[in-house]
Length: 268
Image 1 (cartoon, one colour):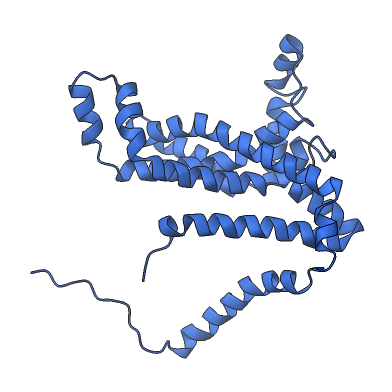
Image 2 (image 1 turned 120 degrees about the vertical axis):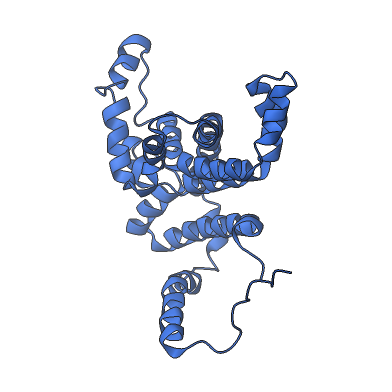
């Protein structure tokens, strides 16, 4: 009988590890605690019920949801391609897909301008053929958010696909189902938890996007000013409003972590 793997020691932590661990914990938690301490709790209802705040919040929710929908439509097939199909250059494709994760968001916004701007590589044709201008519009916000959020969904779904047993899909094709039918009727139900987790991560990332949005879509109230942009603007004129808006985004982030705790955290 194979002995069980050793469990982590439950004795006291050595001082050389305990001190930097505590310092790291304080470093990560202290700014959040300071945000709660300095929050204008008495004026919070007034600050959060202003027309500007609700306008930015509504736009953020709509754009983040639309960006997540775009990520689902494009990202799930892309994740399946990376996980199930062997082709030359797959590693390079995967690197390109994950590049927005490490690319500075402002650089991503500039790249979107060069591609989809009025004089961009593709944007000039969209403008001349269809009269379609994407930068500095609400659609531009969705595109910028989808650009930075989709890799989170692709990574999550690809990992779930690699963990799923491909024999079920192969059995369905053996019984006469097409590969698309096998994916839709067999594989997709199996990977639904991974798709849901990736969608939530993508939605949260889209909701908090700032750099690519302000570069590609600008900061126009009611049209492109999302919550992170409203926080940045309020910080210059009304710090209390900036704190109130930051608390809203903090609450959303905590809710996302709480919803994903069973997937990303292991039980002790």
